[in-house]
Length: 219
Image 1 (cartoon, rainbow, N blue to C red):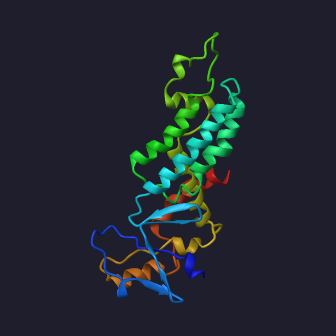
Image 2: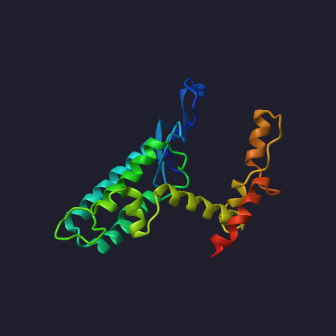
Image 3: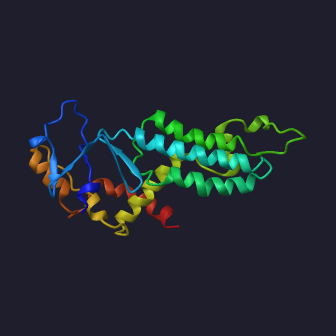
């Protein structure tokens, strides 16, 4: 563990957080700085888990790549542009998206606008000597149907279901630590922590809902 590269991120929604003993934490005589945001494996976590920093970073990165695709390829190269968008832009928006799916509608709209703007740059129908879009394909959902794509929120849901299926079947590393036991009706903080950290002994009742998705996900 490199103490010089370590950061402290205190996750809490409270305005007045409990003070840190001695003002800060140290490791090998090095002071660990407290940050409002920290990055781990390419995902930006905030102290309030609002995911604004993560979405803003993804949107900025995708816009740069989207502008590059638009600059180098005209509209008639629609198939090539779709392949580039999938590999260079949508892969960034899909990365670890199941972990920050709980974003607000405003942040999700920012992500959808990236895909929406791209679909407006490609030719989606037979144009009679004009570079304007066909009227029937102006709407976002109509554009998606034309190229056989799904909204990003639906792709995130499918990713969550796929991960849940892998956890249910024991195909997900550390999955037994994610599925937690049912909590008792009355509990203390220490008991709650013990239940949350304990490995799975029996499957919670909510996991039975996954049985209906096994056939579709397996195929």
